[in-house]
Image 1: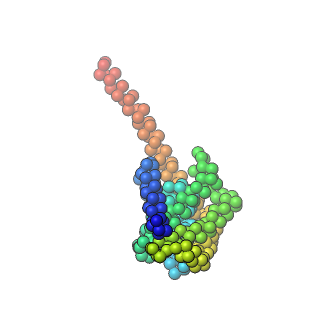
Image 2: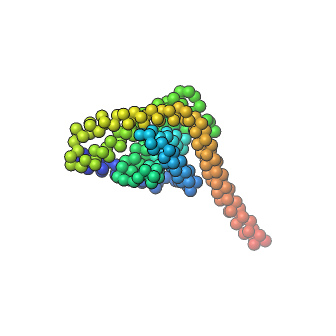
Image 3: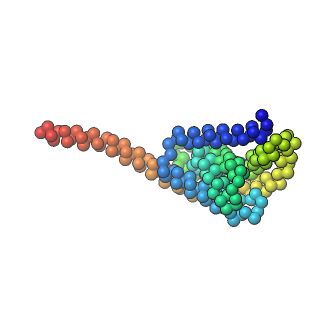
Length: 241
């Protein structure tokens, strides 16, 4: 099996697993609306910075979406941001790899949030990135993903070489992309250091509303399931009299 074919099979398998995972999860229409909105925001935020090679706030916004809303939301926001932003920048085979790269960045943000915030019953009420250590840990991982994003995207270049791809192509791609990946990392560092805390507060507010609304619906459904048998029993008693 060639290197190119192996990479294509790997990425296709990963997307298949994500889709199966998403299908089996419980996702209501409100959460779908949040995912679509966050994906659109991350996509639109990329456009004004199009003249700067690899410098944009999309990676930071995708990772923060995952940090606040969870792994699954983070991945989907990243994938949607790639598709929507490329409606402006241009679609192509690279879109699939950008979906993967930003999707994994968002999923990583979700895992990071789960570890750092110790998500539990009071997570929705507790401010996120509230300490200096948490903020700068998130910032540094955003910077790291500037490199990881580029390293994943390099696989697209290697695959495009087809049967001519070899380990020389592999190492050459990573060496030549270093300056662009560094620009991406520096941009992520700047955006995250300036806006991580304030944007986390905004995202958490919408998360709080989403969770509160869902709990209200569940409580109403539970109350209805209890009251309905009582009503039926009351009707039967009246008929008996």
